[in-house]
Length: 595
Image (cartoon, rainbow, N blue to C red; front, side, top):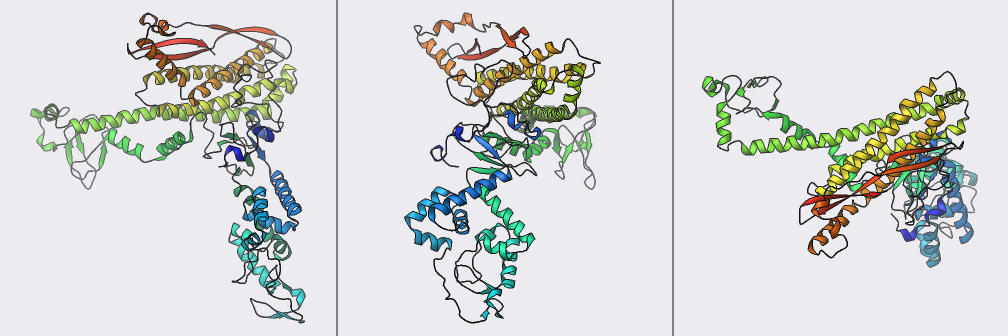
């Protein structure tokens, strides 16, 4: 991808309005920070219902292009090159296709060596074949003679009949996008064939295919643009680097990572996502399950799962070998002296002698590995399922329930926007929470401080999200099912708006912490290490053993003003743990800081 210097400022492509911060009446503290980094997720929703997710996320570093937008940009570039270089639009389009639709590169190459560019691209200044004065011309393919009006040629002057041209163009178009680099049918000629010949001689079906290839080439040949990878989506994304955030949202409501084209996965990096997806689809986990839950038949070596209580195992036909599950010895050698039907003294003795240590160790490792993977995968998948359900509920709200609620509560739909915002927040937070489990799976086990800090942040984020989800999913039903306007609806509005804002701020800070690699833990660990070596440092007094596990609960009163002027104080917990590791005392120290 292009370097940041090659790209325009991210703000140049942002045509949307700034976030109005509907609930608080102004920009929140996080968005007003001095670091200048863009908000990772949320802006005003677009008027178009199809853009409900895309509009909720920041578009400062990308813009979504419809087909008409792409065509307009394409024609603008062709026109610019045509005017500057004083050539036809057909020739300009041939140049741009050759140089991957880079207007600047076309200009540089042309003015550096026009003759070389013409020769390379196939824009000949004069015909190779001199014009004929005869009344009939011979086609270079079928060798029949035709009147001049039945003969066509490009800049090279080679003569071919219109029938042969039509067949040649049709065959090339049906061969795929390579038709955009079409050359003269003469094998020794490099003259380019432009879209004017296609428009003149191709069938309507072939014209449509050619125009589709022509339009798509503008995106596929441009390193700053990509098609949305969602199935059936025809939108494209024009991306501008600079923010460090590669997550983009299409108008089809699909969010994906610009860098790897997988679904949006912030705060997890692309390499972690690649490993996680590969692990989910690889056969390695199947083998781990087989290793952890089965044993090989001593005779045929096929894996066997024990599904009954006794230790007497019989392999399936044609093997039919009978053996002991514990020691894998022949069953005919077992009897009362070996423990009988339900136990095996042979196994116990062999285990004490160390004969089964390696096998058991491998099986135990496989079982632990499988259990750990299952723990993270189940929660990853559960949040994905919850996100899909939230998307369905939002569509149901948009299509039916919003109008119903407006009628019952005698409130305009424009003033019910806070419910849509809550659902959008849930959808985004479910996506973030889902990928935190992939982050946690690959977090090194030896970094105990980071893992404890991460699990605290993750657990607190999940509990906050569940409160918001339950509020919008359960408490909204009483107002949908009420017979008329409810006096509690304004309280519900304030509560839901407050939960949405708190959840948004918490997840924003969670994302920043994970993207920074939980740097707070490292910084405080360094501070703790320094304090143990020198008692004169500023933080030594805070890392004494007497302060270990010191925690303070901070009650933060969040003040919100609703659009009708109702003021309510909401008491909540908004805390952030900064975990410090004391090297000398090998203990964990927790200190609380407000967000």
